[in-house]
Structures are given as C-alpha cells and as structure tokens.
Length: 199
Image (spheres, helix red, strand yellow):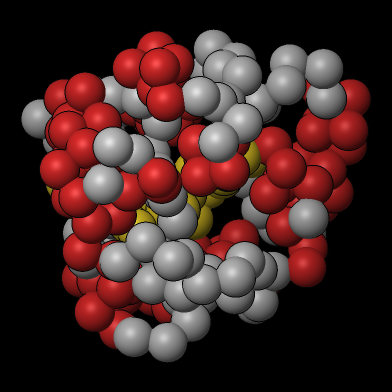
C-alpha cells in the first residue's frame, strides 16, 4: 500500500496547504494520505491554538480525495512530535508498504538538520513542493545531496500560493480577506471558536 504523510502545525491550514497536498496526491496517487497535525513541533514554538481545534480545521483536506484521512496520532502522543517516530509507526502498521513524506521547499533545504534524518530517508521518499517558484537551483542541489545519502526525492508541481499561517495569526492578512485564503471548513471553525482575534 502507498501511504502519503502530510504533517504540519496547521495553525491554521490555508489554501497553500491545500495546493501542496493536491499536487502530492496527483504525483504519488497514494492508497492512503494521512494529514497529521503536530503535537508540539520540535522546530517551532508550541502552538497557542488547542490541538483539538487544529485537528478540526484540518477536516478541510478531506475534500481533496477519498484517500485523505486526518490523524490525531501525534497529538495523542503528547510532548514533542518528531516525524521519524511517526514514520516508524506507519512502517509498523504496513511493513511492506511504500511511504512518502510531503515536505515544503524550506524544509528540504534544512532536512539534514532534522532528528534522525538518515533513518527517515531509509523509510520514506520525500515529496517536495516549491513554495516560491524561484528556489529551484538550491532545491535541486539539496535533493542531489540527499539522494547521494541514499534518499529518494520527488518534485510535485504545486501552484505557488502567497500565504502563510503566521500571516493569519499576526493579522498581516486582514479578516475581510480570510475567505480568499482559507478553505470554508477552516473559516467556519475559526469563526465558531473566535480564533486569531476573529469576531
């Protein structure tokens, strides 16, 4: 079975996240695509948004494909979320299956700094989406270095989307523009629970 893992803080998930997963689904055509909101990411500050609400907002991804499932496995583990542990869990479920891990272009450039990154390369192929569209040379150099280390890197052609979750949280994108950058399911949760200073 082909399993695609798409993890992140998703605080909140926006249309750029949707574009990235859509492109990865088209490339890999997985039997199962697992969207995994992180508990506490090791490389970021803990999210101020409750995990249950981030999980609820991620329901937007199920509109992309019947293969998409939202998992609270990392949230339920408690403590910091390390992707290698999630991959090991998925491998234990399906020892003979193929694993694919979605990573943004910024993550590919620093992948060699991730906890147990060599083990991750052995377990999963990396599916990379370029966010800016201008970082191709650096991306391909990083991919070549990881492939030399035994990894497999695939490039998904995702439509670049000028939005970051931090733009919503910080107010850089005003509230009257949120409907343009957020899926309706995400926006409904934000309004219901008055997140990010919404009214």
